[in-house]
Length: 407
Image 1 (cartoon, helix red, strand yellow):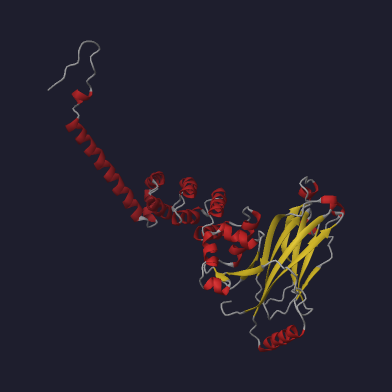
Image 2 (image 1 turned 60 degrees about the vertical axis):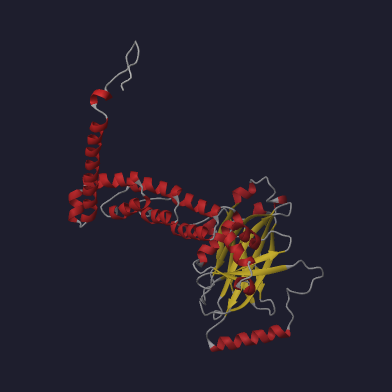
């Protein structure tokens, strides 16, 4: 992916109206919306909408995309779906995307459960005026270079056709509003086009508002601004897609703890503090004995006291022979005294087993700690005897009469 060349990017918008929405049934499909090459009539993508879902996703509106393109030229896309309400406002944004690696599969990809029919049919905020659902689908796609010589010749022929025919979607429009696109590239070479439009909130403007780090990369006169591209060298395709979804929907949608961990790390590095907090909350609610070590290390590395406090409770309840050493190291690094106490109790109860399993170092630590505690106790007793004689400590003030002061 590092050596691929971006041959073409484009942004397409489709408005899809579904009349008599309440009468649609599972499996019903609205007429497909084709997305063709901007110069020649070659189908690239196809938007498919199922108002009542397919058979396996009944009760949901499904928005899918099927690719129709030359496999030798990897075509990646990103789609953002909104509902246009009765006031013309875009609402309930959701996103999905796919990075092609030249596979020949034509399976549908997308939002199988975009929104439930029950929610729409019972909505009172204008999502379904006159029993009509209107979807706003914005699709960005990128075509990359091919390696095969034959495919290279084919692309040259396509370019020749593009020169012969005018672009069908980019004709001059008087008083056209200024629009531009900025690319975000992942560590795998995937690119997401961020759209900007003068005087209007777009995904691009909201990304810059969410992350002051990315905003600085875009707006500072550096290589990124010159090339109109920001490279996030430590972020993969799935994490960036989840990040964009969060920016659009203003809520966290992840499927696994691993996705949340990756997003948490990205949020910290690129200063998206609300996202980091929401990821931390998700991780805290999904702690278990299988992932508590990993999440605890994550909280420790990012100095997240709130998340580590939740991990601390889970760790204390799930100390075992297999993980006691890792928990011990975590407790020492964070100076987590309560956790160290729990580790000490566990080691004391399982001393012989730990020695048999080769955990001599942690047993020796317990022995050394106990010796230090005994030494401190003895010293405290000696110091107390020298400075506060028992006879003086037991003195009580007289009940009546005058106090006597000793010189």
